[in-house]
Image 1 (tube, rainbow, N blue to C red):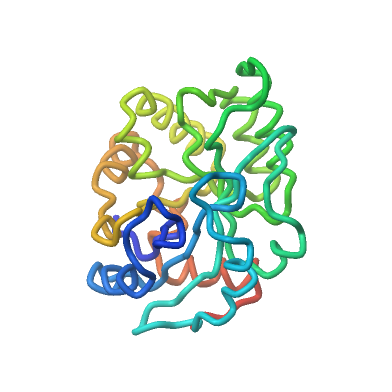
Image 2 (tube, rainbow, N blue to C red):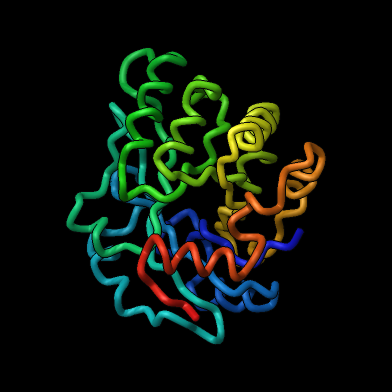
Amino acid sequence: MKIIADTHTHTVASTHAFSTLLENVRYAKEAGLCALAITDHAPNIQDAPHIWHFYNLHVIPRQIDGVYILRGAEANIGENGSIDLEEEVLQKLDWVVASFHTPLPGTPGIEDYTQAYSRLAENPYVDVIGHSGTQKYLYDYRRVIPLFKKYGKIVEINEGSAFSRPTSRPNCLEIAKLCKEYQVPVVVNSDAHFAMQIGHYERSLEMLESIGFPEELVLNADKSRFLEHIRRTKRIDLQ
């Protein structure tokens, strides 16, 4: 299985990342990727760019050096599955990853995160459920993953979080197994905070192969499948 697009990457606009967009494009091209999503952090996290960053993404060409560009964001999930970008901004974006980066208020438990993810699933602007295997944001996978299927969400297999946090590994494996069971599409992403991470998904792919995960459910493992999804859901023709 070969990944042909990375739909979760960061630039220096997120201040704990270390590469420019052009550096990311360079490594994406060297890795043989056809597309790259820019998904810098949305406002409710300390290192986020100014909101004008998201309003101004339109200045970035649709294609740079042969690599298609998706103009996006990584939104932060909050109470009741809310995200920290207004509809006016979301309407301007091609691609939205939604992730937990900070705990819910109070002393939240599994039920609180289950409710948040369940409500998030209904948000039509969210494309991808980002790195949801994080141990401190546990939710009821079996209850929620069918909702991701129902509402057309894509579940991320995140090369960074799944293996940089050992406690997340069994959770990521369980999520992948349930995506296979319920036929939920996934994307394999680097979550790159440095350009040289782009194009490296070895551990994620090894995990998927270990459970016989169907290649046809990996949205970004086939160029035609990926570009058709973008055309159909975003009305953007990258051909």
